[in-house]
Image (cartoon, rainbow, N blue to C red):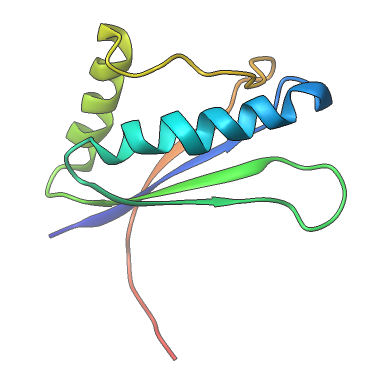
Length: 106
């Protein structure tokens, strides 16, 4: 079964809204994403030094990666998913759907 990653790079809309941004991601959005068929895990990452974007990685296991992404969009449009809270919209988050080419382990 093909695997992929949905990569999302985002920032809080302001330093004052950092806590609200993290609460929405951890308390609402991650759970909503994990309800989508094909999304099997979620991971968030933060920069170690200085200013930078936060990264969310959603691991996908599905035959049709684009169908998983379409399902996410349909849920957002129908109101089944919450609207982003305290997420910078200018510039908007970077969202990329990536297909796994190979896996290497130590």
